[in-house]
Length: 252
Ligand code: 13P
Figure 1 (spheres, rainbow, N blue to C red):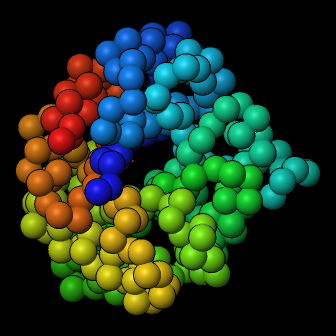
Figure 2: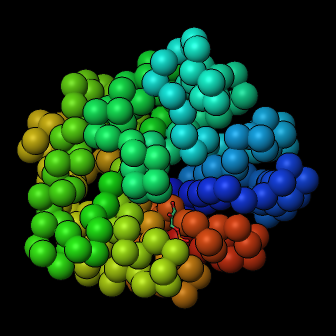
């Protein structure tokens, strides 16, 4: 049985005091390991203070981006080793905002995933199609391409450490959620692609979470789908009450 994962991607939101206050509330509300893996992804500046608050807590901390090199003359960049040093356990790689606004390609994301795994970070690898791609019937082709590029040459032993996040771009921040059957169809395809194209024989154990306008109202119907193992929450993950509700609803 896969433990559901509920992750909040805070994007470029929250000051250090705001992030710390949220983490304290979360720690108080979920003090013991439950059957939901809770992850929060603060901006870089708040990572270390949030890790400090969440010591001795089952809540995991993720970064939102990293560079693939270990160190060097890369002004403005942060390496996987630096994130491990700050106490991060997870890393979001390939969010559509990184792909579209910052020009990150499949090849770059593959380098990031290799570097993250080498440093001991667990990647949450995001994939998803645009509205145009969906409407032209290209969804599966795009998803398959993103998986093959991003996970190129990742050994079986490492594939199990990766969670995939299906985030249809047309559903991010738009209030338009994929219907549960629409999301299920793609999640099932992702699992099949991992089994066939990556020749991974334990695809049934891979955590595949959904992202795109998830809120307390639609969580239950999404989580009831057999191949949806959790959520990557944007807007609703900034509000403590909504995020806590999403976690509660996802408990089995
Ligand atoms: P929203 O939940 O705001 O649609 O954002 C989803 C997302 O991009 C999470 O990474």
